[in-house]
Length: 289
Image (cartoon, rainbow, N blue to C red; front, side, top):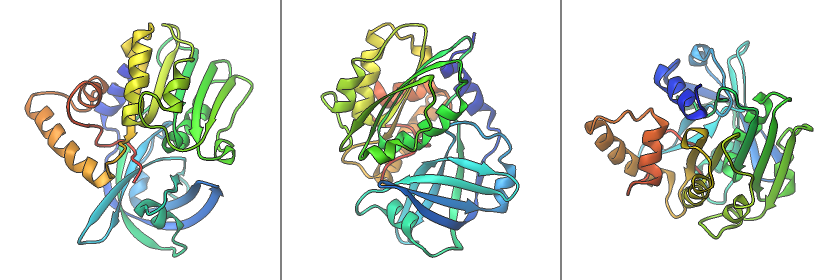
């Protein structure tokens, strides 16, 4: 039976759609204390036929002199009018936050998509999701996709309780909230709380947060009877590193991986590069600015 990791690998390798084109900002609104929802529209999005939970894409911001590429999650897509919605986590002095809150409409931006980041493994009826604020939009889409006869535990960190209200929670979902600043490292609140999560071979695990935090949580889960195939862990950002710096590092890492004959669409290769190698990887994962 195919695990979450195997299914994501198949989805990624199939490359159902790849877009590098211009889209236009058609709406923007504040939806919580720390999130702004941006609507994008473009004819190129007509190629986006299969919408899956936690699908990711990137937008090129910045200036011609200094490009800044930032990653986001598809929150909603309406094929009738080719409009895609994304929830942007707001940060002080952030190019993405400034772009999302700019009230001017009809702004064209370069759009790069898509990345697949979630699937339900065969025979799975229990899920554990771990996320900091950068991954709240992805978790929101995942919760909407998981059947209501499954059981879900969500460990979610956000700056305010209002931000956690963005998650649609049914009776089959248990949310363990953490309110505060972003967690970084093995002794952070998110990593410490993750050590109290149920572990074992009967559930699948999806973890996305800051790189050192994800590394610590991943190691704990693997050391406590979670099969590698049932754990999908991604670093959405790296403390002390901008997304632009990370992209430059990843370009070198991925070039070396390809030259070594590795399949960079394989989540197992991502694991090796991001969490067991010396350089960061994850060229298409959403990142905080």
